[in-house]
Image 1 (tube, rainbow, N blue to C red):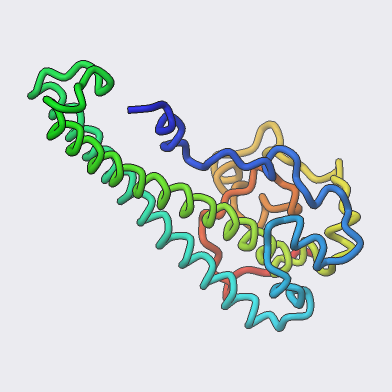
Image 2: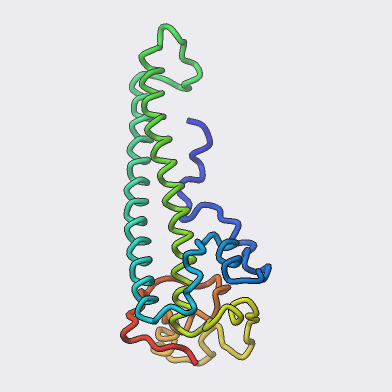
Length: 213
């Protein structure tokens, strides 16, 4: 097996957007910002969208992410089964390296290897595609959450955002256990689209959530 499989099981594939966010270049329009963020210009009306439509977008995006994550786990499990199958076959037939096989006398082993490797490649391709789509959908979910929470009520607030040093990023010293546990709620954590500590969980019930002021 070649080394292409080495990084398949990271939680997310390497995404340069997470290291050098494209929207930090301050595009002149929201459409440009979306395109640089890997999102469709179809969402260019997000800031003017009725709240009920934003909630539906949040919910449908969250559902799509969770379905993809189920499929990702299934494909990871499939990859593991193929890997075990390959190793068991090599042990059963006393094969140390596939490259040691001869084209004539070992043709049946070579045919088996090629068939299994083709299936593994299919699983890897699906995994990479699903992980990339989850990353894109999570950016959309984060943006939608920012708008619903009033963190970014318009494109200018998103484009011109600078961190507010008066907002605490951690529970203050001496906080009670209840205060510490409550501090981590989604509504409190998400301070901007650029917050790289954001976690989509827990899922927000927008009937109970309020916009930030």
